[in-house]
Amino acid sequence: MLDMLVIAPHPDDAELGMGGAIAKFIAQGLKIGVLDLTSGEPTPFGSLEIRDRETAQATQVLQLPWRENLGLPNRSLEATLEARRLLASVFRRARPRILFAPYWVDAHPDHVAATQMIEAARFWSKLSKTDMPGEPFHPERIYYYYCVHLRLVDPPSFVLDISDQWETKERAIRCYQSQFVTGRPADQPTVIDRLKEQAAYWGWSIGTRYGEPFASREPIGLSSLNDLL
Ligand SMILES: [Zn+2]
Image (cartoon, rainbow, N blue to C red; front, side, top):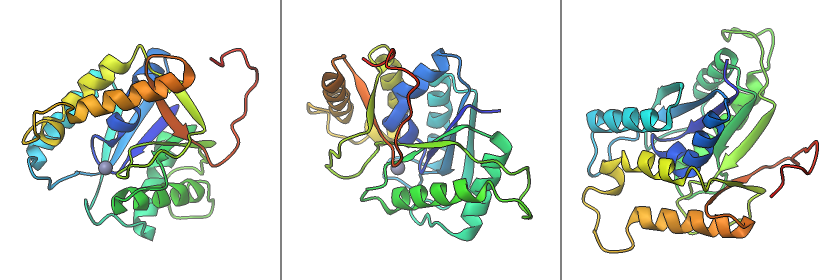
């Protein structure tokens, strides 16, 4: 069903961490989905209705063919057995070969819980002789995107060139007005200016205009060096 699934603690994390990669993979013909774990609300300038509308707009900008929300509690996300079961059931239904999870070091407890939950659910998803719905399925790879609430620059395992996708990523992020524009100081640099500077830094690190970093706990296999920048 899906080639790849991005799991996000809150609606906007997928766009922030890897909106460029999502746009790129879709342009390459891959079927990619986003699973938001919570509503992301409450926030100072958002509401459930506003956040839903913003998420729908960003989904349209990215032209995502698949997006769902698992309905877990925002701000008190926990890697419980029940949450693991729910998530593993999505993996068994959507059958993505590759998972994307938040980077494992973060100040936001929801993000840390999400990463733990995703890794555990990936393992549970392959179990046989269980009462979980669907057939056993093991997502082959898991990579980690950076959407980190720390001023932290841990070296990534690879950086993806998103020079041609930055504009789409910025438009998708701008859909979340309640998170990045409303009530924020208009002084330069704005939140979005900072994001662009970070993307430019990662682009610089690989010799392109813009980039997005990713981490992997396991070695990354290559069949050739032809696509390396
Ligand atoms: Zn978040």
